[in-house]
Amino acid sequence: MAFPATRMRRLRRTETLRGLVRETHLGPEHLIQPMFVVAGEGVREEVPSMPGIERLSISNLVEEAGEVAAAGVGAVLLFGVPAAKDEVGSGAYDDEGIVQMAVRALKEAHRDLTVITDVCLCEYTSHGHCGIVGDDGEVQNDISVELLAKIAISHAEAGADAVAPSDMMDGRIGSIRYQLDEEGHPEVPVIAYSAKYASAFYGPFRDAAGSTPGFGDRRGYQMDPANGAEAVREAELDLDEGADVLMVKPALPYLDVVRRVKDATGAPVAAYHVSGEYSMLKAAAANGWLDERAAVVEALTSIRRAGADAIVTYYAKEAAPWLR
Ligand SMILES: [Zn+2]
Image 1 (cartoon, protein in one colour):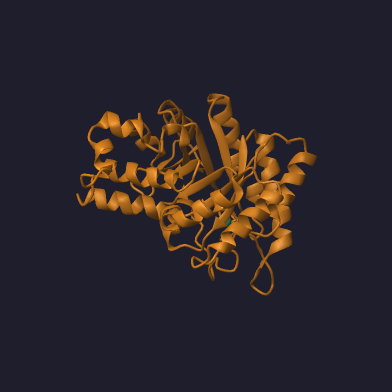
Image 2: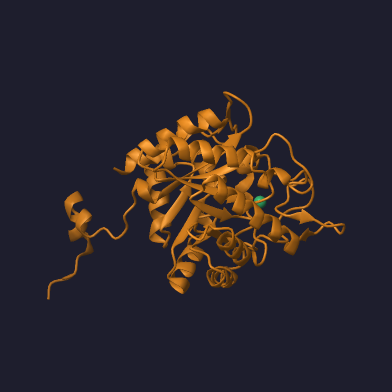
C-alpha cells in the first residue's frame, strides 16, 4: 500500500469540499445581543472600554433593537442602569422601573424580537452586590432569592419572553420557576446562569452597567475559575429546579466547561462571550494586530463547537452579516 492511503487534506482542498464536511454551523440565529438601557431622553453614551457599545435611553434602545433584529439576530438580553440605587435594589422590581418600561416599549415596537431580561440586584443596589448584604457584610442568600423572584415576575408582567437570573444565589431557579408559575407565567423560560465564574473578564461590563461592588468582591457566590466538576453540579441542580437553558460565563476561557455541561445534561446550553473577551478583540483590531472579522468568526464558531446552542455576545449585531 502506498504511503499514506488516508490523506486528510483531500477534503480540505476546495471550499465546496470543506462545506460538505463542516461539523459546526454558526448563524445570526444563534446569537443574543446584550443591551444597556438608561433613564432619560435621547441618551446615547458610548462605553469607553467597549467600543461600539452604548448605553441607550428607551427610544434609542427601541431603534437600535430594530437594527439588531433586521441583522437577523433573534434575541436581546436587557440590562437596566437605573437613575437611583438603594440598599435593597428596589428599582429592580418596580413596575415603572427602567427595564420594565423598556420591555414594554421593545415588545410594542418589535413583536417578533425575543426579549430576555437580566435578573439580578447588582445594577440596582448602592453596594453593587448581587443580593442583600447583612450586618456581617455577607450577601444573604434566602432573602435575596425572594427579591430575585419578585424581579423575574415584574419582568414577565412587563412582557419579557424569558428571564435570565445571573446572581448565583442557591435555590433561586426553583424559587423563580415556582413563583412565575403561581403568578400566571408558566410559559416564560428561565435561562440560568448556572456556571458563572468570578472572572477578571467582566471589567468592561461593570463600566457599562455601573455595577462594580462598593466593597469586597463576588467570590463568595460566583464560581472559582479553577473548578469544572462543580459547574456540572451547578448545572444539574438548576436543571432539577426547572431551568430551561443552562449558561456558562465567560465563554472562551471556559470552553471545557461548556462541553462538560452539554455532555452531562444534554440540555440547551448558552455561553456568554463577555465584555472582556469583546474588548480584547476590539483593542487588537484597533491596533491592526488581528483581522477582526476572521478572529471574531473563529471565536464564536469555537464556542458553538464546544457545545453552546446560543451565544450571548456584544458582537451579535456586527457579526450577523459576516455569517450569511
Ligand atoms: Zn449581579
